[in-house]
Image 1 (cartoon, rainbow, N blue to C red):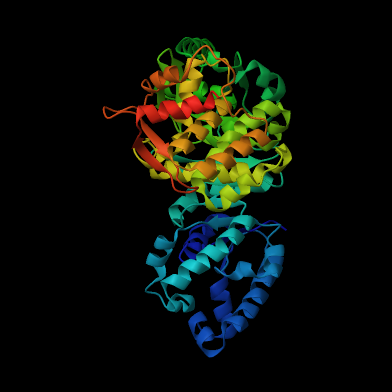
Image 2: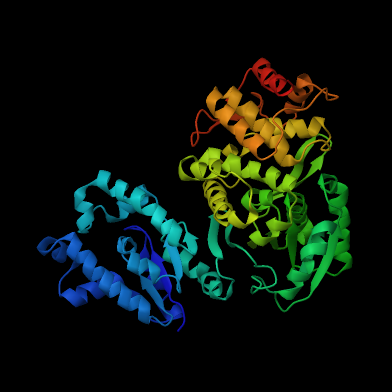
Length: 516
């Protein structure tokens, strides 16, 4: 029996719209509320009024369990509270579960004038119910769509259907922002075992270290040839001259606009390959295949590409949303501990920004076991994509993602990108940002977390530069305005403030503290 596509989510998320919209493409379609009404011979509201919620849940569980047990393909829309039944949840394992994630304001706007029984209890209870159920939806979901728009569901349907052929444990996030949308696949064992998401020939830009590990796996997926374009590993490859060399090699290999780039590697490869894809023949698609933790939780998403100039990091770049992202978390097992720890700083940053459950999950990580990071990678990707959806071009909310990076980039620049890994520099930048935020106890906790994972919490003894050099490098920050350098400050987890101007003397003192 084939798995069904099962839509879950809160009332007003669009489950009924979605199941109706995919019926002609997915086969038989069922709406649990309609089936219940046929069973009991009255509307759901009438049933609630004449019986009670407990009796409704009993009937709902019975109908849903029977439907899920006997479904052979097709699409099913469950009720918002159907997932409260452990029996129903256990039967979702063989199906593809799509969570239509909706915010409280949107959901209330859709249902507030309806006759739904739970709406009558008022907005406060409505919001509380959503908060209670959200972790259940998140735990059960194989696919997360951030809207109940049926047209989006239709566009995502091929990727949702393809998920049945992916390794167990794969999750799909559909990212959408002003310039476009794309699927993100996250899970272990994806490389070499999945249908390739794009047609056409593939030109794989990767560094020589990653090439030896994973380029052959890329070649096993899809039915089109792969041309390799290797570069040297490390930040020194992220330059305009290296980009020109890559572009010349793509041209000599005969790449056309019907082909696409594959960015196989970490953040350096992703930035360089995305930049080359953007400018080659005025733009070709790029599929990101991130193999480091920092790339899987952050840099592979959102479309920022670029190379470094002598003036600073990422001084030349462009926005180029990927056509797809394939994050095989098994690749994290080949990272040295130092690289994994440096990538963890981006997890830490994201947890601080998000607050709530993601922050609690982040602060509870005692050891960096790559096998246990799948859910964290997916949660960080979701947060990043939600921010990008609201502000793709970095004119407002997206600036929160620079937490720790302002000082971190300056440290990288003065040390000529030789002394610290990117994540290590950002970790030090986080400590400075939290001191400037007046969040002293939070800074102490973050410092302990960095120590726990073997990350530096000071700049070491007697570097060839000092705090004044770091502050001077800050003045070349590419986000600097006429008013000065705006910092991201964080008084407490989940409450970032962007564009904050800080007295340079206080900045210098916060950096000086890192030298002691």
